[in-house]
Image (cartoon, rainbow, N blue to C red; front, side):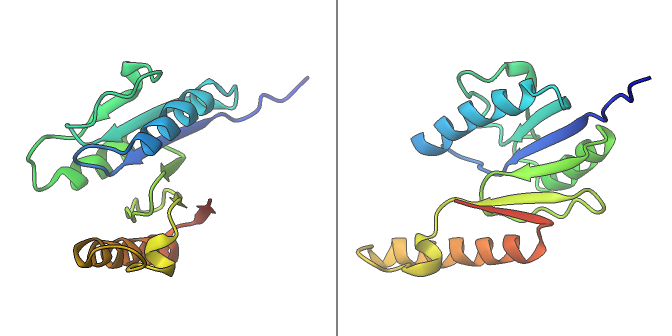
Length: 149
């Protein structure tokens, strides 16, 4: 008698609250359907800000927006992930989200903020990069796994 392979429940958290870059959008549009279609995946859901609920090539039933304008939206998000019994939380950008005992995988896709935050950038963009670098370090320190591109 063959043993049935355990299937995984994956929660994608896209912590972007305003517009997304073209590269990030393309990345999500390729990655999410590919993972959701994998036979080892039982359930997949993308949680994102209310302004970013459209990703072409991603079935809209896979996308859930957290409450608009709610200062407690991340508490809602954490409870929703726990309620859905996610096995893993995947954050495709360097941002930390504490999900308790659910493992978190974060992805560092842009190393410019970490390596050369002011190189060729305006002062404003340089300071934004310093903030991005802080988020990336925090996410990398706390994540259970890191994917670095």
